[in-house]
Image (tube, rainbow, N blue to C red; front, side):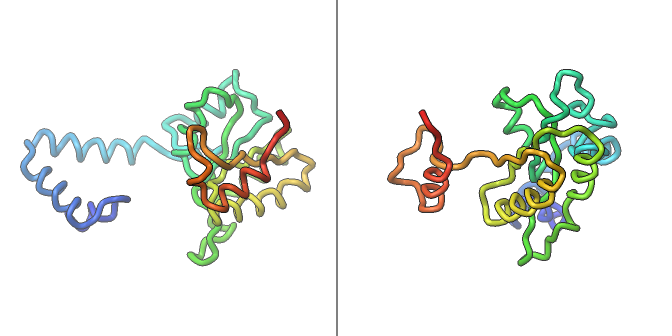
Amino acid sequence: MIDELKKLPGIGGKSAQRLAFHILRSSDEDAEALAAAVRDVKASLRLCSICNNITDVEPCVYCTSPTRNQRLVCVVEEPTNIAAIEKTRHFNGVYHVLHGSLSPLQGVGPEHLRISNLLRRIEAEQVDEVILATNPTVEGEATAVYLSQQIKWAGVRVTRIATGIPVGSDIEYADEVTMMKSIEGRREV
Protein backbone atom coordinates (compact mmCIF):
# COMPACT_ATOMS: atom_id res chain seq x y z
CA MET A 1 0.00 0.00 0.00
CA ILE A 2 2.86 2.37 0.83
CA ASP A 3 4.46 1.79 -2.57
CA GLU A 4 1.17 2.56 -4.32
CA LEU A 5 0.55 5.70 -2.24
CA LYS A 6 4.07 6.96 -3.07
CA LYS A 7 3.02 7.08 -6.73
CA LEU A 8 0.62 9.92 -5.92
CA PRO A 9 1.95 13.43 -6.66
CA GLY A 10 3.38 15.18 -3.62
CA ILE A 11 3.41 12.01 -1.51
CA GLY A 12 6.82 10.87 -0.37
CA GLY A 13 7.78 7.82 1.66
CA LYS A 14 6.87 9.22 5.09
CA SER A 15 3.54 10.66 3.93
CA ALA A 16 2.70 7.37 2.23
CA GLN A 17 3.52 5.50 5.42
CA ARG A 18 1.33 7.85 7.50
CA LEU A 19 -1.56 7.48 5.07
CA ALA A 20 -1.22 3.69 5.00
CA PHE A 21 -1.27 3.43 8.78
CA HIS A 22 -4.21 5.84 8.97
CA ILE A 23 -6.16 3.63 6.56
CA LEU A 24 -5.20 0.53 8.58
CA ARG A 25 -6.45 2.16 11.79
CA SER A 26 -9.71 3.36 10.20
CA SER A 27 -12.90 1.37 10.36
CA ASP A 28 -13.68 -1.24 7.72
CA GLU A 29 -16.52 1.00 6.50
CA ASP A 30 -14.22 4.00 6.04
CA ALA A 31 -11.60 1.93 4.22
CA GLU A 32 -14.27 0.43 1.95
CA ALA A 33 -15.75 3.89 1.28
CA LEU A 34 -12.32 5.14 0.20
CA ALA A 35 -11.79 2.14 -2.08
CA ALA A 36 -15.29 2.54 -3.55
CA ALA A 37 -14.70 6.27 -4.16
CA VAL A 38 -11.49 5.52 -6.08
CA ARG A 39 -13.27 2.82 -8.14
CA ASP A 40 -16.24 5.14 -8.86
CA VAL A 41 -14.02 8.00 -10.01
CA LYS A 42 -12.08 5.73 -12.34
CA ALA A 43 -15.30 4.20 -13.71
CA SER A 44 -17.34 7.39 -14.18
CA LEU A 45 -14.86 10.04 -15.30
CA ARG A 46 -13.37 10.34 -18.79
CA LEU A 47 -11.96 12.98 -21.10
CA CYS A 48 -14.34 15.16 -23.09
CA SER A 49 -14.09 14.24 -26.77
CA ILE A 50 -14.00 17.92 -27.74
CA CYS A 51 -11.81 19.72 -25.19
CA ASN A 52 -10.08 16.88 -23.26
CA ASN A 53 -11.29 18.17 -19.88
CA ILE A 54 -12.10 15.57 -17.24
CA THR A 55 -15.86 15.05 -17.20
CA ASP A 56 -18.65 12.71 -16.21
CA VAL A 57 -20.86 13.72 -19.17
CA GLU A 58 -20.06 13.63 -22.88
CA PRO A 59 -19.36 16.28 -24.11
CA CYS A 60 -18.52 18.30 -21.00
CA VAL A 61 -20.60 21.16 -19.55
CA TYR A 62 -18.30 23.84 -21.01
CA CYS A 63 -18.52 22.47 -24.55
CA THR A 64 -22.31 22.14 -24.44
CA SER A 65 -23.13 25.40 -22.64
CA PRO A 66 -25.36 27.63 -24.80
CA THR A 67 -24.16 30.71 -22.90
CA ARG A 68 -20.45 30.22 -23.66
CA ASN A 69 -18.73 31.74 -26.67
CA GLN A 70 -17.80 28.68 -28.74
CA ARG A 71 -15.66 30.86 -31.05
CA LEU A 72 -13.20 31.72 -28.24
CA VAL A 73 -10.95 28.81 -27.18
CA CYS A 74 -8.58 29.01 -24.21
CA VAL A 75 -5.77 26.43 -24.35
CA VAL A 76 -4.45 25.22 -20.98
CA GLU A 77 -1.90 22.60 -19.96
CA GLU A 78 -3.93 20.72 -17.35
CA PRO A 79 -7.61 20.36 -16.32
CA THR A 80 -6.77 22.01 -12.98
CA ASN A 81 -5.89 25.23 -14.86
CA ILE A 82 -9.55 25.65 -15.82
CA ALA A 83 -10.59 26.18 -12.20
CA ALA A 84 -8.13 29.09 -11.83
CA ILE A 85 -9.54 30.78 -14.93
CA GLU A 86 -13.15 30.11 -13.94
CA LYS A 87 -12.55 31.73 -10.53
CA THR A 88 -12.08 35.08 -12.25
CA ARG A 89 -15.62 34.97 -13.72
CA HIS A 90 -14.29 36.99 -16.67
CA PHE A 91 -13.85 34.27 -19.27
CA ASN A 92 -16.91 33.04 -21.12
CA GLY A 93 -15.32 31.00 -23.89
CA VAL A 94 -14.53 27.30 -24.04
CA TYR A 95 -11.36 25.36 -23.24
CA HIS A 96 -8.90 22.94 -24.75
CA VAL A 97 -6.70 20.87 -22.41
CA LEU A 98 -3.31 19.69 -23.70
CA HIS A 99 -2.49 17.40 -20.74
CA GLY A 100 1.09 18.65 -20.50
CA SER A 101 3.60 20.89 -22.21
CA LEU A 102 6.46 20.40 -24.63
CA SER A 103 9.61 19.22 -22.91
CA PRO A 104 12.22 17.75 -25.25
CA LEU A 105 14.57 17.04 -22.33
CA GLN A 106 11.93 14.77 -20.81
CA GLY A 107 10.94 13.27 -24.16
CA VAL A 108 7.61 15.12 -24.46
CA GLY A 109 7.02 16.20 -28.03
CA PRO A 110 3.93 17.49 -29.86
CA GLU A 111 2.75 13.93 -30.49
CA HIS A 112 2.42 13.39 -26.71
CA LEU A 113 0.04 16.33 -26.24
CA ARG A 114 -3.55 16.69 -27.37
CA ILE A 115 -2.73 19.12 -30.15
CA SER A 116 -4.09 17.29 -33.20
CA ASN A 117 -7.70 17.47 -32.04
CA LEU A 118 -7.22 21.21 -31.27
CA LEU A 119 -6.12 21.76 -34.88
CA ARG A 120 -9.05 19.68 -36.18
CA ARG A 121 -11.37 21.67 -33.93
CA ILE A 122 -10.07 24.96 -35.34
CA GLU A 123 -10.55 23.68 -38.89
CA ALA A 124 -14.04 22.28 -38.30
CA GLU A 125 -15.52 24.99 -36.09
CA GLN A 126 -15.65 28.70 -36.61
CA VAL A 127 -13.02 29.78 -34.09
CA ASP A 128 -12.21 33.50 -33.99
CA GLU A 129 -9.52 33.49 -31.31
CA VAL A 130 -7.30 31.04 -29.46
CA ILE A 131 -5.91 32.20 -26.12
CA LEU A 132 -2.71 30.40 -25.14
CA ALA A 133 -2.83 30.08 -21.35
CA THR A 134 0.14 27.79 -20.84
CA ASN A 135 2.30 28.28 -17.77
CA PRO A 136 5.03 30.95 -17.86
CA THR A 137 7.78 28.33 -17.73
CA VAL A 138 10.34 27.36 -20.36
CA GLU A 139 8.12 24.40 -21.32
CA GLY A 140 4.94 26.51 -21.31
CA GLU A 141 6.54 29.20 -23.45
CA ALA A 142 7.86 26.61 -25.92
CA THR A 143 4.38 25.10 -26.12
CA ALA A 144 2.81 28.52 -26.74
CA VAL A 145 5.30 29.34 -29.52
CA TYR A 146 4.77 25.95 -31.17
CA LEU A 147 0.98 26.26 -30.99
CA SER A 148 0.98 29.81 -32.35
CA GLN A 149 2.97 28.61 -35.37
CA GLN A 150 0.54 25.72 -35.90
CA ILE A 151 -2.62 27.83 -35.54
CA LYS A 152 -1.78 31.05 -37.41
CA TRP A 153 -2.01 29.35 -40.81
CA ALA A 154 -5.78 29.00 -40.28
CA GLY A 155 -6.20 32.78 -40.09
CA VAL A 156 -7.29 32.58 -36.46
CA ARG A 157 -6.26 35.29 -34.00
CA VAL A 158 -3.77 33.86 -31.48
CA THR A 159 -3.18 35.63 -28.16
CA ARG A 160 -1.11 34.84 -25.08
CA ILE A 161 -2.08 35.50 -21.48
CA ALA A 162 -0.23 38.37 -19.85
CA THR A 163 2.60 37.67 -17.45
CA GLY A 164 4.54 39.89 -15.11
CA ILE A 165 4.45 41.42 -11.65
CA PRO A 166 1.59 40.00 -9.56
CA VAL A 167 -0.91 42.43 -8.02
CA GLY A 168 0.09 43.28 -4.46
CA SER A 169 3.73 42.37 -5.04
CA ASP A 170 6.82 44.56 -4.81
CA ILE A 171 9.01 45.19 -7.87
CA GLU A 172 12.24 44.76 -5.91
CA TYR A 173 11.40 41.06 -5.38
CA ALA A 174 10.72 40.30 -9.06
CA ASP A 175 13.21 38.12 -10.87
CA GLU A 176 14.67 39.33 -14.16
CA VAL A 177 12.42 37.16 -16.38
CA THR A 178 9.27 38.37 -14.62
CA MET A 179 10.46 41.97 -14.88
CA MET A 180 11.30 41.53 -18.56
CA LYS A 181 7.84 40.07 -19.28
CA SER A 182 6.24 42.95 -17.36
CA ILE A 183 8.05 45.53 -19.48
CA GLU A 184 7.32 43.66 -22.73
CA GLY A 185 3.63 43.36 -21.84
CA ARG A 186 3.13 46.97 -20.82
CA ARG A 187 -0.01 48.74 -22.04
CA GLU A 188 -1.11 52.30 -22.47
CA VAL A 189 -3.05 53.90 -19.58
